[in-house]
Amino acid sequence: MVTCPECEGSTALAEKPKVGEILECGDCASELEVLTLEPMQVALAPEVEEDWGE
Image (cartoon, rainbow, N blue to C red):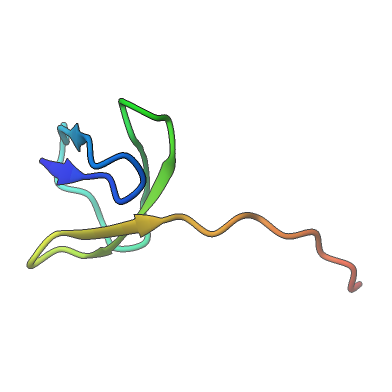
C-alpha cells in the first residue's frame, strides 16, 4: 500500500515497483514517482517539460 501525497488515498500495488517507476493514484489519478523502496516513499511525478534544444 502507498499513500498518495495529493489526496492521501491508499493505492494497492500489484507487484514490487522499481525506483523511478511511475504509478497512478486510484483515487485522484495523480502520477506518483517511486523514490525509495525501504521504506516505500512516493512523490508527485514531475511534469514533462518541452525540450527546446536539438
